[in-house]
Image (cartoon, rainbow, N blue to C red; front, side, top):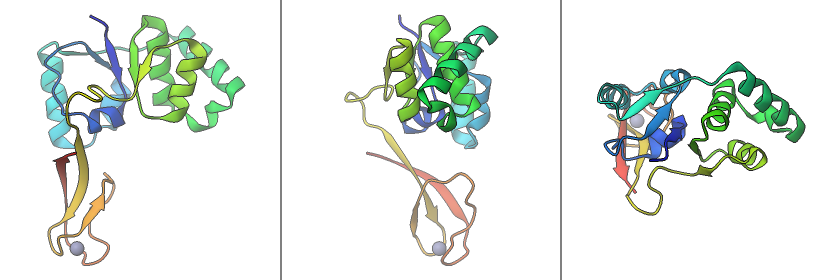
Length: 161
Ligand SMILES: [Zn+2]
C-alpha cells in the first residue's frame, strides 16, 4: 500500500479516520496541531500503528532547499513544509497538501501529490469557531480565544461539508 504523507491542513480537513493505516507525519506536523481532540485522535492512530512519525535525511532537506531557491518557492515554504517535501522525495511517499507552493515543488521534484485524504469519496470536516455568547461563526483560527464582537469564549466546532 502506498504510504501517504499528511500536512497539517490536510489533517484538519480530513474526517480523522486513519483506520486504513498507511499514513505518515513528521514531528513538526504533530507540533503544529494544537486542537486537543485532533491531537488525541492522531496519538491513538500512532499507537495503533495506523500512522507513523518519520523525519527526512539532511541530504534531502538540502536538495529541496536548493530546488525551492531556484523556483522561488523558498519564500513561501516553512521549515515544516520543506521537511515534508524532503521526506516524500526520499521515501517516494504520496504527499497530500493543498498548499500551492508544496504542490509546485512536487511537480519540480517528480513527487506524487494530492489535495486530500479521500477527495471526492468521503465528506470532509470543516472547522470553525463558534462564539458561546452571540453565536457568531468565525473562520477557524487556533490563536483566537475570544469573540471580537462580544468578548465571550470561542469553541472549536466542525461540520461535515
Ligand atoms: Zn460573540
